[in-house]
Image 1 (cartoon, protein in one colour):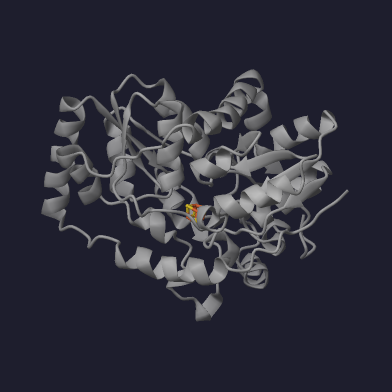
Image 2 (cartoon, rainbow, N blue to C red):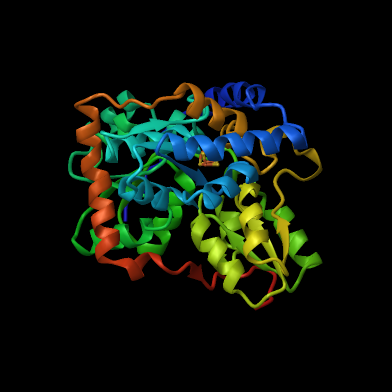
Length: 370
Ligand code: SF4
């Protein structure tokens, strides 16, 4: 097995400065009266403009609720992509981060795709510049190029396969069975986790999610001692020291399913805390505890919430509908080149629905408890 971490060293500085920019652009909270007025106006305009609202689990709870009330969806990036492609609305309002809007546009070029703030990006996307990634691919022509959804259209245009955290394990297993070696980008933690689970030969890019990268293994051990009956749910973008303590590892949808179907009364959740809104709605009797980030030294960089997801607010959704702001464009030939790797994933998932249905269970616990 070969595993080389590509040395991409500029990400931290770039990511940090962009994080400050993102927090500065998070809209001020609305008053209760303003919230209700804005929600009502959005409901009207969605119907008038033949538009549908597609929201990620990490965005503002009001936006999630509106999406569900009005026939849209709240989901992970895999389901967002499928929902937007299959919906009949002429306009897709995508509340999430830029790669999600780009994926929607790539799959639905004849629809108008609008986003509350086009500056809402992702540290994984920022940490994988297309030109440097192309050079990495050129240096390893013998490998299948597998990229995470959290990448730009230009990076996807260079890939053989796109994956999300829901289907990454199943697709890499499939490629390994076919005898392929893999070039993986951009999340190093997810790549390492998949490599260890599948035994595939993978070269890893050195990107990270600034939210999940902050979860801390030592603090999690202490928290588990305080809550010995809690189940630990972990997104695989987290560091190994956190993943190794998980009872369940999975995508946002898979972690949600684990809370809803689980028998335990308490859950420690290691993913963006935006998902707690939907978890509380679907599992109201259960206690949800945020996994620790940087302990008492935590800063706004490590608050378990993505600043780019936080840029999505009701005001931005309303601006999309009133003024057509935030339109996503993906020029040709990048769009059609990127479509190939996304279609390949969607076809695989359609043919293998059971491969993505279940979260991963049964990780070894360090503290001796079962
Ligand atoms: S939570 Fe992490 S992976 Fe998701 S959009 Fe934010 S930075 Fe990217």
